Every structure is written in structure tokens, then in C-alpha cells.
Length: 137
Image (tube, rainbow, N blue to C red; front, side):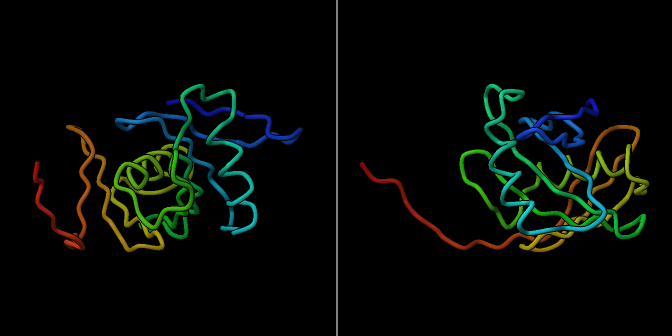
């Protein structure tokens, strides 16, 4: 994990870059701004700093136990929820944003709990089956 300034169109973006099974770029913000999220999410996903692309989370620490995020998923764009994105945003917020090591991460798709314990990260939340299928030849 590293904190970096990434030049996007002549403006530096302060970001926390890490891997949680896949590449993540977390932008800690004082408030979430939909226009900035859409503009910078697309630009950061394909930025030369990330030769294979990256997922991007914009995160606000609302309280030590609550982090609110917007997710820009690599290859998809705006996404309602992401387990790895929630974990990445939580770790960035815990390390650089004053969040506690046990937080609720709220995204447009719902809430998840992320705990960073001595033995690793734990993610819990609800899940719902939205489709079933059967593979046939």
C-alpha cells in the first residue's frame, strides 16, 4: 500500500494504492461529488500509473465507524457494491483517514462491515441471490 499523487489532466489526485486481490485506487475525499467521481473514476481506471487498469473508490470518513464510498469498477464503470472495493476503502480510511479498525462501509448497493484484525481483513454483509441458471452443453 502506498499513498501517491497521480496527475490527472494537470491536477494532482491524492490516492491510496493497494491490492486486495485486485488493483485498487482509493481517493479519500471530504465529501462525495458525483461529477468528480464520474470524471476521475474513468480517468484513473485507465491512467498510465495502472498499466492493467484499476478499480477506483471515492471514500469519505463520516465517523470513525462509518465510511461512505462510490465505486468505479475496472472494465465496468459505476458499480453499486464491491467486497474488495469496500475492503480497500476501509483499509485506506483506517490508515490515512482516521477510521477505526472496525467500520461500516456504505455504498449505493448497501452496507458491509470491514474489520481489520491482527490476523487479516474480515468482510461481512448481506447477500441476495438475484439470478439462477444451469449450464447445458
